[in-house]
Image (tube, rainbow, N blue to C red):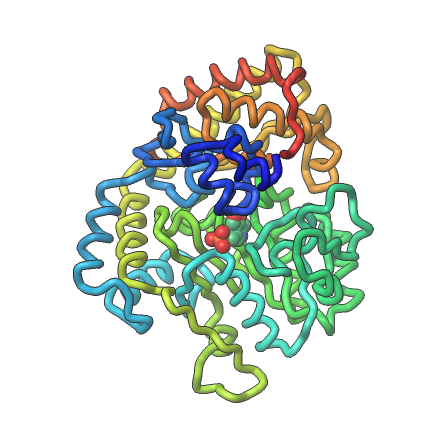
Length: 440
Ligand SMILES: Cc1ncc(COP(=O)(O)O)c(C=O)c1O
């Protein structure tokens, strides 16, 4: 539907108003057909409601940021209390210090830290620290990874067909020249990655990886191998823990996989939905953003107006308190396991070829008869069917991102949500052969 037809009043109410305000009727991603766009009004626990009063089981949870569930009273209280003392100072404040200390005690590599307001900023600053510290200009990242909205965060992510690695396909970056400075390696292929790194090591500032790459688990030895080769070649090794941080374990992927990078980026679940990001790491590298270095060439400017604001820091402290309660990680992992196992049983019961991916409270389905261990295998899966199933789930009252990305569980998810999801997934699989899954 074109903007003209919207303005002609084909879509009324909140949907129509959203379509007239936002490109594609969305505030980013989702790609939902125009007649299906839900305009959300409120959320509680693992459920959200739209402006038409339709209830959805939420399986995206604000892209994983509302890890405690929607409107968790402890986070709301902490944020309200902090706000009464002042909403933002753009300066070191008591709650930021408390949060910094808590994160540094949990994160193996975090000897120094700075707060920003999003995961995008956190990965961007990790990369800029690496450039400043090494004086090198190239970055190696993995095919299909997402590291946020900056060009390096996107380049190599959404190519619709296999790329000629290590060349970078800059589709979607909005800055095609980024291909000059980005090399793309195949996830879970240590030999190929080592070859790429060794060939141009003197130009490479950093290797950045999502330790759990989208929903793909690292092969045994892969992260350890990256750690060893980057150390040997003097390349900064960055974990993008925007998703895995505080989610797979209190110490994130560093603790879960037992590998310590040089720098780490956090966001999403840390703030429980309140906007926050953090980048942290080795003290010598983090010195790159110390203003005492200004105006040296090894100084990287870093200043985030709302980064470290007391409201987000207070919410994050409350989030970390919740995660520190006994039994929380076993519960998150148990829910995730039951979610993925349930999906496998349903797929097998309907004789549908599918691979269920994920770890911890995360899951994703790839319609493929062969194991999916990297982006090439993901691209070879039946993604059109995946999208049809996702759109069908949305129509059946499951809120998720039908662009085929991962599904997130939270502390608020339990048996009723899983059972509700399984019923609808079973139905959605049944009708997916006839539904139109084209992007609108
Ligand atoms: C692994 C990863 N890194 C970075 C980001 C960017 O975070 P934000 O959306 O807070 O900027 C995302 C967001 O989905 C992500 O999944």
